Image (cartoon, rainbow, N blue to C red):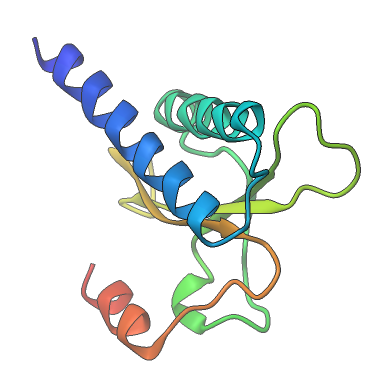
Length: 126
């Protein structure tokens, strides 16, 4: 029963994320592009659960210090060629040893991926 609930929650989360990307103009506005993006996000949810080390460690950079121990996955729909247009940022808890959970922080277009001061404070308390 718990797996059914988690799968349903993952589907709802993927739908909400894809809908937001479409509203912001980040996703293909065609129905096929939106469905492909939703499917790719759902696949990433499953992959992240199975492999919490998915993506690259962000490390120190131009982003806020709080994101240094987060991981970044660049992705796009299969039919898109060229650089991936989207980015998933997640953090493993705990950060040392074997992670017990993978927390998604954002899925957004790579161009201008913001992290507000309010978001930085939220990261500090997690």
